[in-house]
Length: 172
Image 1 (tube, rainbow, N blue to C red):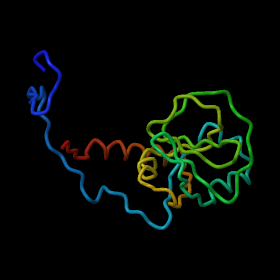
Image 2 (image 1 turned 90 degrees about the horizontal axis):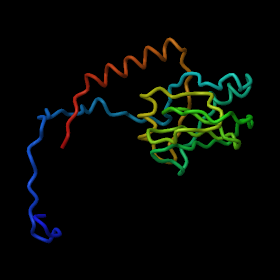
Image 3 (image 1 turned 180 degrees about the horizontal axis):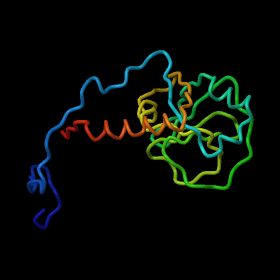
Image 4 (image 1 turned 60 degrees about the vertical axis):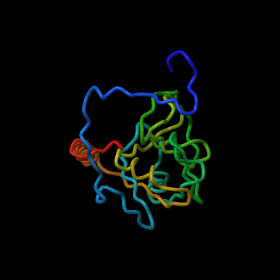
């Protein structure tokens, strides 16, 4: 500051914002209301075909627990019954909400700060709203997957985008 290191009592002046920001607020109705079990809506992932009928029923019918291994990169889910190990796939780009199935058969859901490449099969992809809901879950929370048709997934995705466009934001 003016040629010397900041010291206690120094004041740093800030320039006015180049663009004014309009205050916006989230409505209480936009908060997710948790129930005993959270349903995560998903669409078929790129490796859905790798699961046999039994494994598909098991993946969609099981109730999973959010483990303590959860952060902004991914949420590891646990269940008493593991899905069968699948062969790996050639590493490929990953997207938010991809549900990876590592060799232990316990799903990992990729969150907003996920890695960019991965080689585990991805039988499901969560819809963006479901990723938002999962991000609010704490370890011990119970979750399960609900598979939507591709048409319904596209419809819900558009609704989500429209809702974001209309949502009031506030920066404080």
